[in-house]
Length: 438
Image (cartoon, rainbow, N blue to C red; front, side):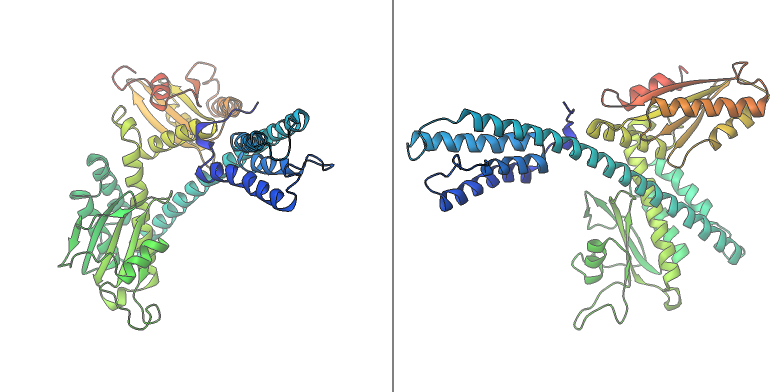
């Protein structure tokens, strides 16, 4: 039998339809054939298509419930002695077996479909984050070329400073973090009056976390803000964007949205030079806020791990926790591979070789304990077989570039799985240990 995980249990709609569909089928048969509403005299048991359909669509549980509805309806009809005095064991047994088969088939494919959707969604989020990083890099390079004298602070330096500030302030938009983020956006977008608001569970806090200039209270029902929150995209005021009679107190509204869709905050601009209101500048600010939102989300999500291992990158810790949740919900296994490098004349090159072996979705964390360098590679949606192949490739690379370094024990490998029975912190503890004990 297929293993059913808690994360793929049917929703409320499935249980409602599991009751409604057989009842509707019974009403139709009562209306069409009141003398034989259960269609026992027909050459084919058409009534059993109702629970079979429910089982195929929603799985085993709702299908069994639909079967129970038919059984209870027949029992009530028999008690009333309206039509059928005998209990047709053969038809009910056959219908129940048909529903079980359809339910098992439906549950299997629902689980497979949700696994495939989760893998695709995870890959899309990683791709979106990578796209933002590449755009930030290109933007930083262009700005460095164009304004190295007038703006000596590069975007990369600003983001590195902001990332450190986020870690120090537990990843919340407030105080120093909000001020740094808003001034960074204004620095590269040319804003003169703007405000940054934080969001909690997709709801905006009406109190501004940081402001530049004098800003009025947030108008949540403003047409520009409403459109921004509804469409989750950057909106700006233009002659052809507002209908007759509409007006807005703002020029630009930019959502700070993480790659998984979580709304972290909202930036509204009330005043900026006309020449700065260009698509290029708005795109730069949008990507900047989205990139910062990803960092904020990662910092907030990863606190349970970064408190134990302060040198663990928040992005790595956040992805470990996310993949552990996916493993518990859908049974999609991921693997951690740890390479421990002892002191060796070519250890620096060995670390670079191992980092170069990472696949597209793989994430690495490099840490040092005493005289050892530990490189942990997170391999999403990979089992022990895939990890074993990675280790063979790594050993071949080390042997090729370092002579007999791998044979001399300069590198040792260990693997651990993130599955339905594991805990992310316990897995990391087994692989890395504590910063003091390792």
